[in-house]
Length: 194
Image 1 (cartoon, rainbow, N blue to C red):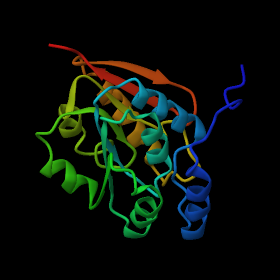
Image 2 (cartoon, helix red, strand yellow; image 1 turned 180 degrees about the horizontal axis):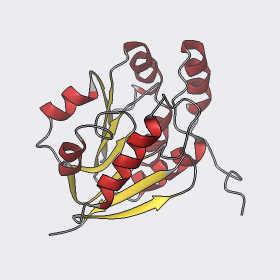
Image 3 (cartoon, rainbow, N blue to C red; image 1 turned 180 degrees about the vertical axis):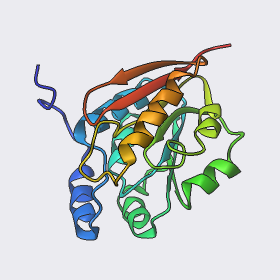
């Protein structure tokens, strides 16, 4: 099975790829992760979705394409140039709220809110404030992270941080967890009911 065959990209992705190149942004999710996010968003109805790390909006476009009309997405990015691109290309969608601020501050200010899907694609909510973000996942809700296999843009010593993160997530008995050695290396967790 060839997993890149017949993936239909959201219309906005071609312009987002071009805009990312123009500003030198290289941290967008890959197409496989995007297709996975679209599928997960489509599995939810009337969902409250949080994306930490909008970037230029590449993953945001996939999530929006999967969402039903009643679902809502809040996407958070601290880099104003990247956030402006995402807002310019995808901001016409009334289901999306674009927040330009540090993800850690957002988590601290919204720690009591519950989300059906959280895609943590930046440091806050993934490498720090992880406990707080996991507590924001509603029962039956999903927590997704990527880039857990070695990546060319990893800083020195990052591999140890990834190993520490995975080891911590494996201790959580309030979630079911699936580790996927696929795409860039993903973890999908579902909060247990009750």
